[in-house]
Length: 225
Image (cartoon, rainbow, N blue to C red; front, side):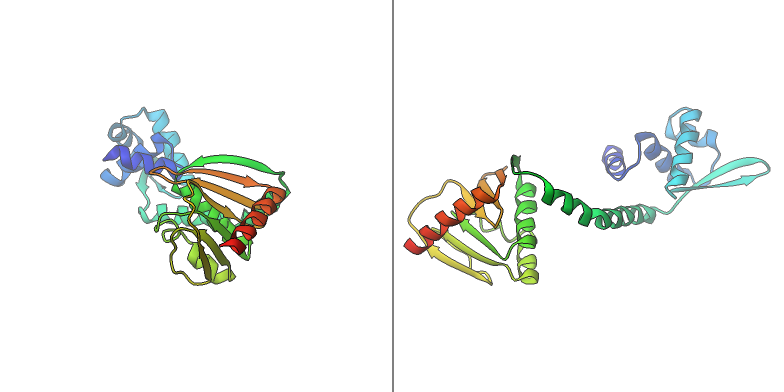
C-alpha cells in the first residue's frame, strides 16, 4: 500500500524522504522534529531538511512554541492543488513549445503503446482539416481518445479506405478487398503507421514530402475503390 502511495507522491514531485515525512505528519498530527523522525524512520537531519522542503511546497506548516518548532501536515487536498498549478504552468508554455516544435526538422520516431497512438492522432486533429486512414483498426482505437471531441471542435474530416468501417460524424469511407497489416494515418505534414496488437507499434514520420507521397497514393486508391 505505502509503496503505491510513495510512487504517486514521487511522480508529483516529492522525494522519498519528503513522502515519508508527510505521511508521518498526517498520521501523528502536530509534532516536533524528533517525533517525526522516529515515525518516518529517517535521521533528524534528513527529517528537518524534508520538513523545510514540504513547507516550500505548502504541504507542511511550522509553529514555534516557547522556542520549540512544531510541524503540521497540510490537508491532502493540497496535492490536487499542486497538480493544478503544474498543469497551469505547462499550459502557459505550450504555445512556445509548439513554436519550437514547428522549427524542428523532419524526423522518424518509433513508439510502443496506445498512449503514443492517441497523442499523435489527437495532435493531427488539432492541426489539420482532414485525416486520411488506410487499413483496418480496432473499434476502440478512435473511441477511447479525444479524437472525436477535437474533430467536432476543429471540423476535421476523415476519409478511410478499409475492409470495415465505423459510422462516425464527418467521415467518408470506401471499401477495398486488401488486407492491410498496418494502419496508415496521413495528415498534411505527418504520417503514422500502426501495427496493432496488445502493445501497438507506432512509427511517426514528420516529413511534408513523405506525407504528400502518401496522400497521392491514398487519392489514387480512393478513386479506384
